[in-house]
Amino acid sequence: MGETVITARGLTKSFKGFKAVDGLDLTIERGMIYGFLGPNGSGKTTAMRMLTGLLTPSAGTAEVLGMSVPKDAEALKYHIGYMTQTFSLYGDLTVMENLKFMAEIYGLPRASQKGRISELLERYELTELAERFAGRMSGGQRQRLALAAAVLHEPKLLFLDEPTSAVDPESRRHFWEQLFDLCDAGTSIVVSTHFMDEAERCHRIAIMEAGQKRADGSPQQLMDAMGASVVELEGPTLREIRRRLPHVEGIVTAAQLGARLRVLVNKSIADPVAFLTSRSETEGATLIEQVRPNLEDVFVTSTGEGRQ
Image (cartoon, rainbow, N blue to C red; front, side):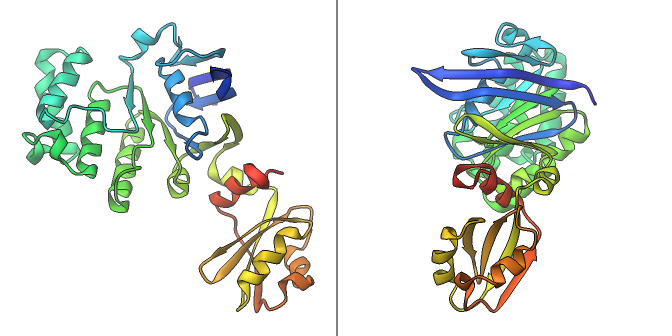
């Protein structure tokens, strides 16, 4: 076991009787990218805000970098970075003015501010944009500025709340390369997302639903432990097969993906291909084969009607 940067036990947050986060247990080790995966309203942002000390838990305990939150929130803020879901810097200030302002907020010594800001401008490709107003930047440019501001004080732990929800796929990919650079340099990262491909990039993820953690582990561990086998079908009558299969005992879900029907079959069925081939409900299928699971399959079996 490595050094633990976050430990939470029974972390709960209620708003007028509604539990946004319900009994969350977490152990996050140093040097990893840990992801919260879940839809809007699953409790990701609320959990993150409690861990940063911005929200007081209704119940439970949390320790971040050895400090108790929210009691030590004031001291903690100098050791963590937080990038919110919506752009929270000042649109009527330039890139340079925003970074100088954040340097003052974090108490960076005046002697080192210029060098650190120049370093980040170059690293995040903002040098030529230094005098541009933040409000006139593209989504990808604002994202890079927000990340630069969040790591300005070289935090040990970085929180990112759905940081790529408003950028294009190329910017998302580049952003994740920057996260791995930070991680390689020693920064631990907690990120929330509803993108499956992003979650697969994390070292470890928690699948969230209705304020509760449904599963926790590395993407590969979760796929290996999934309670269903994955079978794909091809044929001219996929929509009809899709309508019939959900009524069959042992079928978890069935969903069409392009020219194939992806079917999750309960793990208790030893030979899922033979099982489906023998069913009248799959009549018309020209190909039935077992395939490897992905993180979306894990999500489906861990949440909603697919829970085992």
